Length: 295
Image (tube, rainbow, N blue to C red; front, side, top):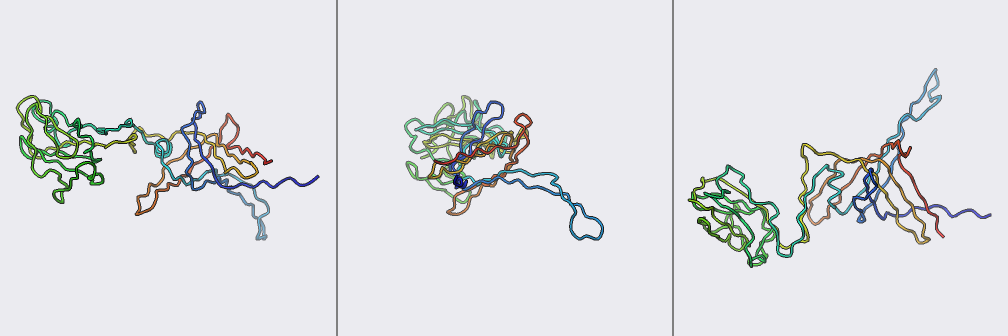
């Protein structure tokens, strides 16, 4: 009888975390730089007498973890490994107000009676929408200046530019008139005055976030007081080899916390995950390997 073919593991195909309660998947990671399981034992050595070498040694504890480099960042990655909550805005071919207009400094700018009642997308001007956070500052009791926190989309529709180093985008203050709409020039946005006598407090501010046409927006909040890092299972697969052999690792009870998000010049962001593998008393195991022989 000839020797069996050697088991050879090559590459990585996917990593799919799932909920331990019902095994439904969170999703799948396929743009991966690599992954490895590490089982590292700590030993208790016995020394005695004049012998310089140990008489005996026994493994005490085993640290088990899985590390992976991932090259995509779906929502569930933040939920599982940064304890984040995720709110989504549905895809829109015309753009969206992602964060509704809200007061920031005091409460006189957004006011249904004496301030600005709404800031909304202007019908017919959606092509001018520029992705940014906009800050509306009361310049007087009846006028406002508008600032933008980025120029990344200033080329959408009609171009705009910063007016000064303070990032103001309005050449002159906009007059707020009761129950009347006024453009924030060339941004695709318009503000409407409140229903009463306009009387804002100079220096008060409000803000909103707008997005141009998009395929969906995720708002990912990290560091809430209620944050948690869900225990989960996952299945990781090596690449399928030319002989159709497969190598699979399943972890039954895993937990991870934290990963870096790089924003470097001309470099893709590649988070590195460290996932602890825990003992699952139901499965009576930490992990399971399923190796399928090739043809």
